[in-house]
Length: 356
Image 1 (cartoon, rainbow, N blue to C red):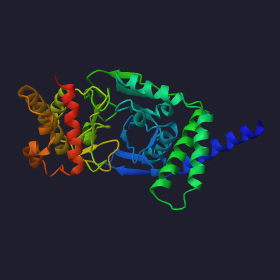
Image 2: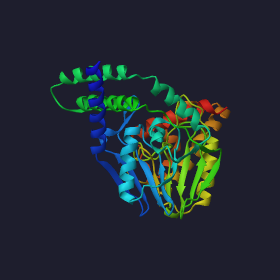
Image 3: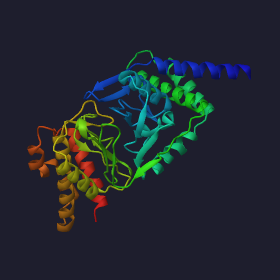
Image 4: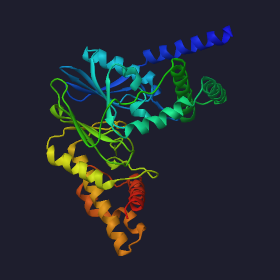
């Protein structure tokens, strides 16, 4: 029994020591806005490694606003400490979740004294993660660590396979430590349906619900004075080969009309958008990227409606050549490579299923 307790204590200390020692990646957007993510080996979502997770921190006269809290308390602590050091300020005014998926809300509990702001639907999304996470046990996670460590011992050459296994081991160790620390998911305590404006200090932060698509609670977060838009996982902005494409999901309701309505209203009211930051993007984009996405959504919606009414096959409009005029018009922001074509065909299938 003493050996088990000793092992637990050592494991807990070792994991949290490595977490605190891990470097973070900071990208300065404006004087008051930064995006910050943990070092690559710390970037793990529940069940699979992820290459990058950006949180966005905004300095205001009243304190700091943080957008997205990473996928676990361990990663959230890294981000929180980095932001405090960078801005020399330990006061947080609002914590915003762009939606309820684990990579955006998993670290909410680290900010237990702060208001968590999100869309009304985010509570159900977070609960799904809560149920899954709390279903794990320390014993189960240790078996995973032991198994993957044995597999790693059989690999003689370093490379993508060994990196992936090391990532998995790190992930299980992090969640083991979080469970030992009695981790519990924290839900939002300030929610809205369509729009909300926050005014911390000298900043105006506008929140807009996009409608169902990537998830059920996705929002746009616009920092007016810094001309910066945070989009969560709504768009694949720089995260894959397929840049500037919408992030629709097969097995969810996809309310493309709501997307179009929200994006059109946003673009109509905001001529100045200098930076667009996605949670899994490598670099900020510009307003023209959002303009393309809005036009793309309109074109896809109209093409599907017309094809269904005229009896045109789905395969016809899954070909990007059917949208040549649109893609040629925005060739400066999107490339019709093989990955974009594949994503386009998938988008057509998804919207086809959702439009009567």
